Amino acid sequence: MRPTSYETEANLRERALLVSLVTDETRRSGVDPQLSLDELIQLAETAGVEVVETRMQNKDVPDAKWFVGKGKALELKELIAERGITTAIFDQELSGAQVRNLEEALDAKIIDRTQLILDIFAGRAKTKEGILQVELAQLTYLLPRLSGQGKNLSRLGGGIGTRGPGETKLETDRRHIRRRIGELKRQLESVAAHRGLHRERRRKAGVVQVALVGYTNAGKSTLLRQLTAADVLAEDKLFATLDPTSRTLKLPSGKEVLLTDTVGFIQHLPHDLVAAFRATLEEANEADLLLHVTDASSPMRDRQREVVEQVLTELGAAGKPKLLVYNKIDACSAASMALLPGGPDTVRVSAFSEHDMNHLLHRIEDKLLGAVCRLRIPASRGDLAALAYRVGDVMQQETEEDWLVLTIRPNPADMEKYGHSLEPYRLDTDGTVPAGEKTETETEDFK
Picture (spheres, rainbow, N blue to C red):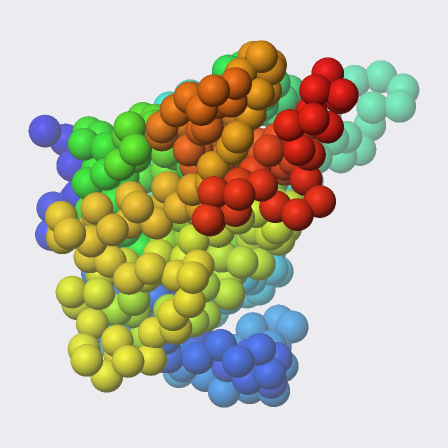
């Protein structure tokens, strides 16, 4: 089997130097530079690169020409020659001019964090939609970084008005890329419209949707496998899966909902990538409940949670009902577990614990369907009985003379939208109609 760029033979692997620049802005942002560099190591290894050395440079602001400064660039050049390094990967995004200057100075391939993430996405994309999305992000990233070769690649013509350099190769490349970007956007608009039709069909059918969101490698795909027995890839790698997968999830009450796994997030996630994957990420916008999965064992868990919240805000999904799921507690120390926050919207699980998965299912059901309540409806009001079945799960139905007593677990969203007609018939916990509600006589008058 031919080795891919992610599963290469040892002698084909690129040898890389990883470089991170710590600036005043980095310090103000509160990001731990070492943890960010550790994450870059994981990204490089995911891309099949052998990490030979890492270097961290402190500087007030990035150097406009050399990024890390000319002196540091010369130092890195000596290290690259000495260790036989072929690639230098930078933890921050570089401009086109900085890439060209560093390539000349270091005599090595220069890649920044954004390009590395895009390369990983390109290797992971399997579906037509995923491939289109990655290509769009790559071309959008490449367009401002094209470097032409001047008059050597000019198109020359004959006749008046065509003498001179004509259209340079750089201009031709830019025109071609812009045309391809326009074509990809049109194709993705068609994909987005197709997804919208599916979402509208599910909405009309009353399908309840739950979306798994979270930082990459937090265990979303593993949870999907454990909860639904879905045959999806689950690996201890960054961005192991890209394409969203939906499976039916059966809750303890017997009600079925749709559980969707979405692409993972990461800090400094390229904006071009967010824009290209917007049609996919908007699955989170349509969900009735978000399961925000966080790796409880990661030293960056608080920062990772903030990154996910920022991306959700960009997508307009910040106000969605959420259940914060701290996964991988089996890999946590006692001291780390003690620092985990709690609360009604938080749950701690290990994806490989059957007890934890059952507990998670009950928590999902509680968030989706709300607390159990009882309704006392006139037996002649079939419309209200039908409405009760529509807005929740009817667990028990009893008859008391001319009344129907229903025990239901309402869906909070549906109850708020359609259930106002049922409120006058809600029973208190002692089985009596609350004060001020309709009596039987008033109900008959109302009829």
